[in-house]
Length: 300
Ligand SMILES: [Zn+2]
Ligand SMILES: [Zn+2]
Image (tube, rainbow, N blue to C red; front, side, top):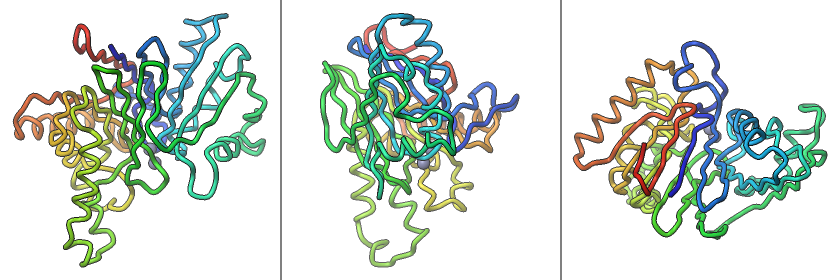
């Protein structure tokens, strides 16, 4: 059984306020419990609330957390300095992610907490914090974690987390290669199959997931003026998830300009697209506080 809980569902920048209260204004953070372990995908502002919750749950007991950073854009790391379990010496925190283009992951996380930006430095946090750049599939207890490079203007990983029976995929901040071509017209490439080959690799990575937390930041119309920004229109996310025979797609990383009503419309549109393709893929919008259980008694 794998349980996922959403603490931050917004992309780009935190967007508090009445108009975004239902889907939530905190940036990317998803907690996953599996195999008796605690995994966290991204440390956007949502991780602050998760930290408070963990403090209540674990109190004086030691806590081990495995945090997977998709990439180091602010909306995916900005909550880390506010993650309370990192301030207690009883805790062990592993932070995994891709190396940056010209800086290490460790360096980037330290720079974010430089005294010009934040009053406490990373090295002054009391927990044992271990930052590891990863490249290939590895295991943590009974779970396998497989990183996969996404198409985004930063080194960005999607993650495939599996036990022997279930698979959850976290894949946010990704642009389909075929769509993004029009940003940089290149006739030779456009005529080739290469973009389709790369998109197919992504579909293969998603293959048969029980739960896919996938980015769908834009409507197709919005996407027209945002090609090359590294995000997906709903159409491609639904298409890829459907081709991969994903069982449940959760639309994630809502645009800061999208209020709750807009996200409602986008989710309905995605559901229509999924139905039109046939099959049983479930499709919902991620909201703060949402919990999904994969396996055992099914999904709730
Ligand atoms: Zn993002
Ligand atoms: Zn990004």
